[in-house]
Image 1: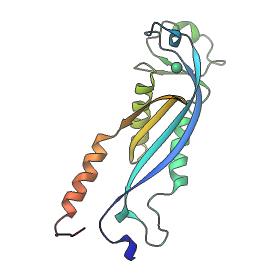
Image 2 (image 1 turned 90 degrees about the vertical axis):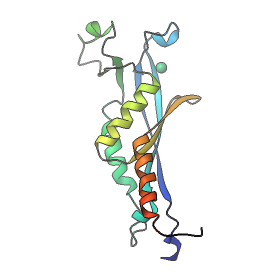
Image 3 (image 1 turned 135 degrees about the vertical axis):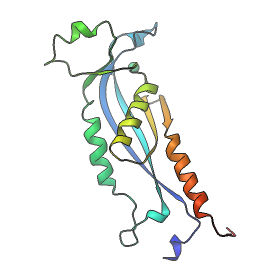
Image 4 (image 1 turned 180 degrees about the vertical axis):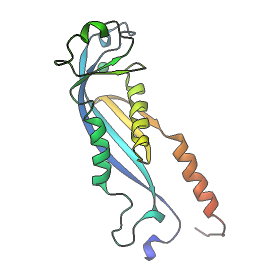
Length: 167
Ligand SMILES: [Zn+2]
């Protein structure tokens, strides 16, 4: 396939997901310390390489396979209450396990920490996640990066660069 000849290129797959959840950040001295809800939007980038394109199907990873793994994880958090496990409300709220789908974390439930949490979870199910942009609101969010994958891919390019190329 002539169009797949070098130079190698990342083929970054971009997928978008969302889930609804409540949380609070009691460390902040503002309205964010109240329990409130967000429709979290995730824009996820998965790094594949042009050299991994299947020559028959023309793809690297099935979008549907990514969806299956990501959605299985996100469904655990959808319509849940996300709380730091040292939240002072937790002992009280845990008296109502049937009515409150509480998910606890060993860290605050800020956009920064949640984005890193999902980055780790996606890696654990074998997804080559490069970055996650987690939007708490349409105007505010955080992007986190898997620096290790960046490094691995960069090393891969270097090790393949045995010959001189003009491009
Ligand atoms: Zn919030």
